[in-house]
Image 1 (cartoon, rainbow, N blue to C red):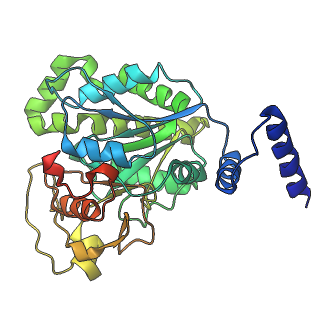
Image 2 (cartoon, rainbow, N blue to C red):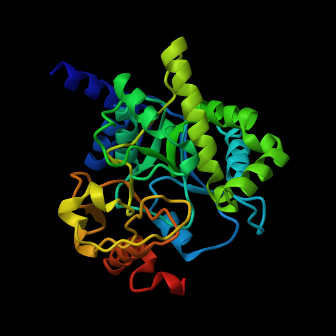
Length: 341
């Protein structure tokens, strides 16, 4: 009753401030209560780096709960270093108390949830930045540090990451407070290997130039490792954590050995020189439950906010996308093939 009285007083103030308006509709009142439960924020937006138009980018624009902002250095794609620099540049134009979502542009789609649910799940982590995950530690240059990072997060009590298949960082999905993202990208800019292009080229010549295609993820790994050491040794506040249960960002790429009940007999093949253990990019569609405009992998209890088809092959993601399109989940796209946009 005390809470109800407080809400009544708020509604009375609203009505008195807007004479001639009958008040909020029941749906608006419910939405206002939802938003009042969240920490105060000054704005929301989603950020993608895209050097060209793409049908899948249109899908993302229509399914993303936040307004989508596209950044680019032009039509020529020179590597994922461009993404790091463009994101950092744009973040400095954003208010510190905004929530910013960073997504890959051409292989991510929304999963039928609204902005309230995205913010609710984000704030439930209790950490300023949440980063998506995958089942493969990539690029391989992170080595044993990838497992060490998962163990450190577990020991610090932030996530139960050691038992989760998807416990390795993926740069294709990030959500966070703008002030924290600015710190992260400023730190990356200060310490990145690309500050010495000759060293970066020499390293690429040594391990293979495919390394440059994962350079943004490599630098995000390096930041996270530096940061966790400072958290553990110097008592710094934790700025970021991993979405190891894939509550926000889910991937259609898996390791067969992580899901023997579902993928134990599924054929796998070595597909790339930069992944040591073969991955399943073409998981059967029966492993994805679709309810209306939301889908989940049957091995996990959650319907995520986004689906990401990371990696060089995207059969499972393509199939899931097409099923959602067939269900009319992208408004004006109903009845159209993504390739026709």
